[in-house]
Image 1 (cartoon, one colour):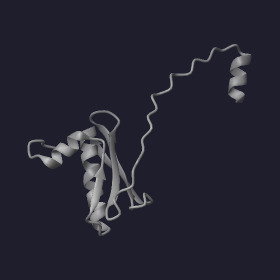
Image 2 (tube, helix red, strand yellow):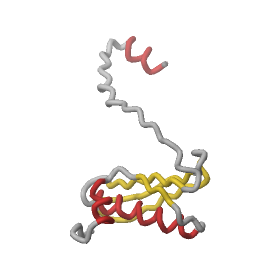
Image 3 (cartoon, one colour):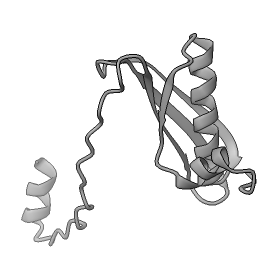
Image 4 (cartoon, helix red, strand yellow):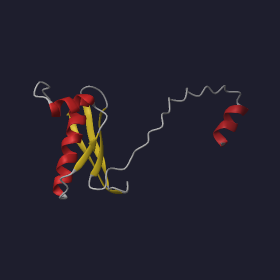
Amino acid sequence: MDEFRILKACQVTVRPPKAPIIREVISSPPITSLIKINTDGAAVKNPSKASAGGILRNGEGICFGCFAQFLGEGNVFFAELNAAMLAIEVAAARGFWNVWLERDSQLVLQAFNSNTVIP
């Protein structure tokens, strides 16, 4: 607040940036017999530094694990695809075979369901 008082005293007009669009996202817990993993991948530019991560939830929606990994150089598709593959590896390493994998990339879904999408 002191910064705003100083700016006002110096007669500086403050023009804050427009607020981003805020969308409510509601996550539903998985069916009791499943483990739900939400994943996401990101890259600063295409290509650039890329990372992937995810969160594991039980049937009650309670978080019991998460993962994040720096992937090095890559694009967004590379990061999203690696996030999904890491999620499967983490689940298997913990002994979970019934997994609900939720991600925001339709291209990754196509890569898993088709042999025409080449990662």
